[in-house]
Image 1 (tube, rainbow, N blue to C red):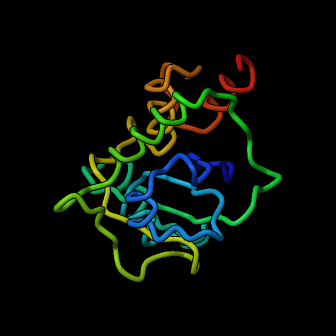
Image 2: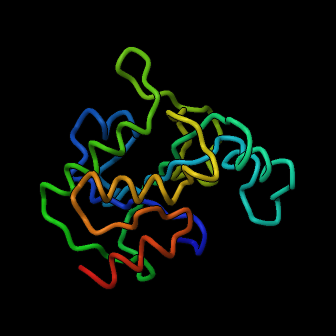
Amino acid sequence: TNGVHTDFIVPVEYLGEEFKRQLSITDQHKYVAFGWGDKGFYLDTPQWSDLTFKTAFSALFLKSSTAMHVARIRSKQEQWKKATCSKEQVEQIVAYIKTGFAYKNDQIQLIPERGYWKSDDFYEGTGSYTFILTCNEWINRGLRKANMNSAVWSPLDYGIFYHLDSKQ
């Protein structure tokens, strides 16, 4: 979490060769971070100082398209929070992550030249972002699909980490 938005961070060995190819994963990358969210928010708000009322209002109260943010990471980061899970649960989370991507001819749809850094990209997403289905609730639902401890509803990151920290 960055204090507001939560990502799944998955070791690359769980992703499968075809998925890694589509995500431009190389041998240098050890982990991949996946976030789902409002497309306009992601693309128009690279830093919190870029947030406008219009972007926030649209994300929360209007039917909006979504995007997947994918960051390729070379090494484990100290600030990450670890969730203990089985290999099967990681595989279930990866299967869930894949449902967040829009596909065309079995290929995920890159949004060209829209990453924050050289090591990340945005892809077209599925579903609509709302104040009920936020980026954090999307993560929460993925944890639930993998039979992991989760909140009943978690629009903010707090509910995710409360359940993981206190019960796993």
